[in-house]
Length: 126
Image (cartoon, rainbow, N blue to C red; front, side, top):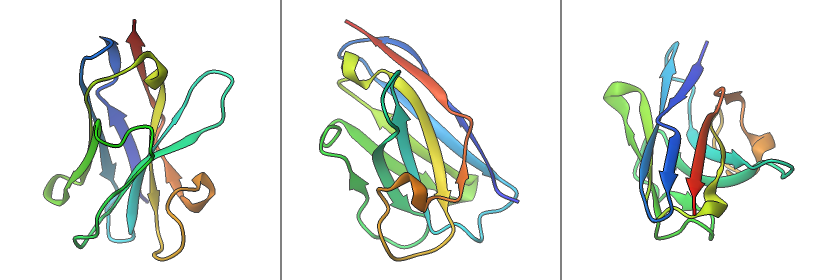
């Protein structure tokens, strides 16, 4: 059974950087896509970015993070990374990684994902 664990969150000043990690235990054979979502207080969970677990398809990014965030994967380590640069106070949220066990369709909807991590807090101070 796939279990996802996020790490790397913390407190950073605006303009700073953080790198989040999402590691899968229990195997990765069923994973097609890994996505990052975030949820700020009193807001809905929103899509940040997603990457295919295999193959070279270009990652998807939300407009709000394009040019600042980069998703990457290390299949040997069963880990997906989210490098976040030029952070803004609006990026403050709990960040979740999620795995999708099927291909095709949309990767931006939270309901499309089958397995979620527990989340890691990112706080950006002004």
